[in-house]
Image (cartoon, rainbow over all chains, first blue to last red):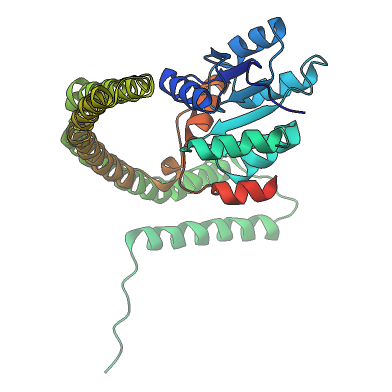
Length: 127
Length: 220
């Protein structure tokens, strides 16, 4: 499995600044087909309407958190195998374990840099 | 020298007399099993019981007075401490001021971040320019970044003000807590499920006791 440069990526974060940072980092990595959503509910609607090659989501959002979004994504047969990376300040072991159990493909702790993001995307897609 | 006997208190003496009188009456009734109790006997017993209750009631009265005095003293002290808290000042000035300061911090950091990102995006989008032109543009954008970073000084001052206010409020709350009984200390506000969930989320937000990226990578 690989992530094509034109594969649509969904970035989910309630902070527009973080969305902008992720968009720029992804652009530098060669991914320009990026959509965004401000929370899990909005993201889920977009995932139901479009097939994404990768979802990158924050954890703490309202009304639907990134963790709940992950569980919903995994419950839908259409998106059950969509690669999902959590990018969050939630770095407690129990959070990481919960996300892993729910089916997250990788986990990035904020603050992070472009190299970390690239490393995790590569790891998810086995590059 | 003979040891001085402790003088019985009025209540003790009275109690002894009542007990003795009841015992005497009991003996009389026991020694006269076939006899009937007269009205005089009944009145006598009633009088004895009434008189026996009087010292008890006096003692209860004194204890209650002491308790009430204690409660009154506590209320007066508590009122005095509450007045020192200046709740009006906290509610009307300090907390709204804290909210304003924090809003300004959010605005300033947002403005600075956007400005820095604008500069970065401008530089990244100008790679096709001629070298001299590109160099000038990069220099100008770097200067913009330096200027934008000055937000830290102002936000630092604003956050310090907020920290000072929180410390003042904390000190006053600690004094109030110390005034209250221990069973009241553990009482927290009653939160709805939604409020509790929001509080939990805030409490579990960015923290310094999490694991680092390397530890997380090891889990994957």
